[in-house]
Image (cartoon, rainbow, N blue to C red):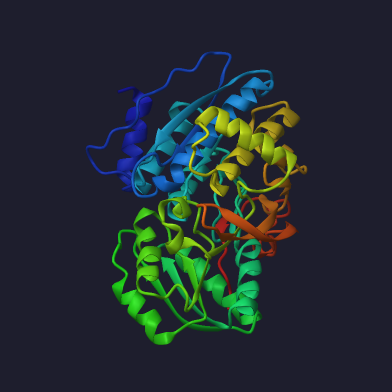
Amino acid sequence: MSILRREVMRYLLGTGMIAAGATLLGKTGVAADEIPVGSILDATGPINIYGLPMIDATRFAIDHINETGGVLGRKLRLIQTDCQSNNQIYAQNAVKLILEDKVAVLMGGITSASREAVRPMVDKYGAVYFYNEQYEGGVCDKLVFCTGVTPAQQLGVLIPWATKKYGKKVYTLAADYNYGHISADWVKVYLKEAGGQLLGEEFIPLDVVNFDSVIQRLQTVKPDVVMSLLVGGNHIAFYRQFAAAGLKGRMAIVSATFGLGNEQVVLRPEEAEGIVVIYPYFQELDNPVNKAWVAAWHKRFGANYPYITDSACTVWNGWHIWAEAVNKARSLESKAVIAALESGIAFDSPEGHITLDPKSHHVVHSAHLAKVNDKHGFDILESFSNIAPVDTMKVCDLIANPNQHKQYTPQF
């Protein structure tokens, strides 16, 4: 083990981020004329239902960038790690990629808990970090760029639509970690604005697969709408048990997370059809960039690829936004790249035209309401153009206050 690797291990052990006996991943060689870039995602573990399409999108994006001129005229060399759905391994791999592999950018994280395991490492060592997943909003950090949607762009549209369509009484089911708890608070904010009533909320650990008691409570309180903020492979069981209990025709399910793990492919149509979700990207979007991208995706990964997720598109966006900024800066130096990112970067994505808000480091998206159909896909119901991440923009101005490294949460 090199001196640097020993120092990294000693730091992680000292902070408790890894246990004694843990090992760092092996170093990947990088040619002198290549630019090393790092990816931290989950190829294994219960969160890999999101990670596998994101890993595919990462490799696809790197190859596309390299095939279209690279960055600063040089090819990118991807160093990709499997974080195994383990937040300690996220922190471990982030430090290794930053200090030992000296990556020009770090991209990844899926759950908000994984992001918050990585962010202290990024702040400590000064790396540029892209978090490419929808989340609960509020991260305000000079070194961090969030390309996924925030609650203002999802729940701020979904909740008023659902209460008008189905009724005012809502029951929230959320994953039991920071994403679920903060997002559930945002449900309260937007539900109050819509004149709705919260009948109850529950926070479900990621390892739970039996929802009998949850089903019984839903049968008792009889909400008009179930707001699902469930996460991970184990939580797919809820939708199956909900349908088996005969609740599917008695109350609607709307969700800010369903479909990111291809749940609509795993479940039978009679279990999932009719669930309403909202994201910037759906494979069915009818625009020229998306049609070309889907065709290229299927050429690369096969015509029978289950479904291209919003998470995959967000990863594609993140890599291309970073590459555009580096080429604009004509430098890999962090301050120069951040200045370029804050100058107003735009990108024609498969989801449509997107822009990066310079002050908040978040993306202005269009969002689409869609309903699960009987073909393991989605039917677009309604589209909303250029929705700003106003929940985060209201509290985060990294141009005026560049030294912030915090996450804001809803204030009641």
